[in-house]
Image (cartoon, rainbow, N blue to C red; front, side):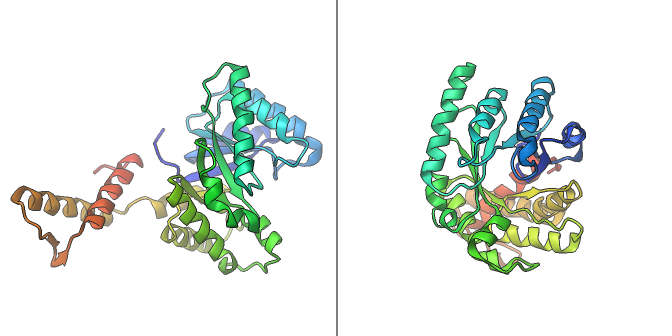
Length: 291
């Protein structure tokens, strides 16, 4: 299991065949969904199915569970049933305020205590889906030590804002920027939104590239075909790896000589470039590339 969170694959919690196949597609994380993918009539059955599956089978990737929102009658039972399974995190939809996070944190602590597992074992990912949530993104991201990341629920956000949907997502640009900024400021993962038209691979790849430009480090996906496309965009290219190596070589040489001037191929090298070079090599190593 690598140390990266590049992709989070949503898997319906009420589909046994999909649960058993979930890890074979190579996503860094699988999210078993008890919310949007499950009809009201199947909520209890989906919860029982996921609980039984995770009680008997260990996945060779990270595991998250999207529970139902706090204003639903399924929320408490979801949290009570899922926390003892020790997933990496619970993903909470409709996250709007710091209080949403703090209430979940307290509830999870109670569940961990009852299950005899250390407090703080299970983390939280907040899905922000309303104008109020976007406005409070930083407060949400810093509300609890359990917060692993925050991400945008684009379709619900569009509905809340009465937006007209475009293929390239121009209307949600501000929200994406705001969430990425808040996540980086808080020191948690910025999670990019689900691009629902999985058949449009060209549009999807362009969207992933744009999200990377905005600072996102993880993409939520709904179809296995999207996983390698995300990894191809996020993973450093051979050219980027080689350049990063060269930057560090000239930097080390300059430091050894006590020189305050560092240049590579006629271009000045400053500390932010050195920091980025180190990050590129660390990312490449974590993704399994030889460096």
